Image (cartoon, rainbow, N blue to C red; front, side, top):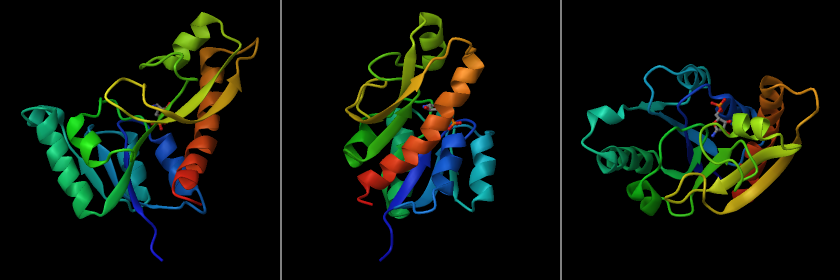
Amino acid sequence: MSKPKAAVFASGTGSNFQAIMEQPDLACDIALLVSDQPVAKVIEKAKNNHVPTVIFQAKDYKDKSAYEEMLADKLIKAGVEWIFLAGYMRIVGETLLKKFEKRIVNIHPSLLPDFPGKDAIGEAFRAGVNKTGVTVHYIDAGIDTGPVIAQAEVAVLPDDTEETLKKRIQRAEHRLYPEVINHLLGK
Ligand code: GRF
């Protein structure tokens, strides 16, 4: 039986994309990588993994619904059923939320609802918390606000710098995200 198809949306380095690709028993096929950045390390990673890419620039479209209609069309044509956000630096709008209801998932580097937003690791570090972590959640129209699916705690150690903490959080992300994807897809 063929596996369900998914797309990863990413704007940056793509370490989570790579971790998903390297999961030996991944329950879906990653059929597309969508990026809003014409130059990004994740695009090279997609090419190395033979994953087709859809690259767009928001400025080329009239508004969010215009580029999301274009994306929805390509996703549907490719047979994509699930969207996994992995460092996609845009808020997903109504168009995609409606067409992929309960099928868009994000990973965020904190224990939500603590530290939403772009600098979750830096904010947790500066706040002096003794633990933080990672969250995989469904998305809704807010920023890092949708229902939580799974979390993993990461200790903040006394001699941590923001960089060492970030590395430990990334390792937790790379373990958790592929596991949750398999769980969601029934594996
Ligand atoms: C990750 O920390 C993820 O939690 C956040 O964006 C970052 C993406 O990193 N949403 P990478 O591009 O997967 O390395």
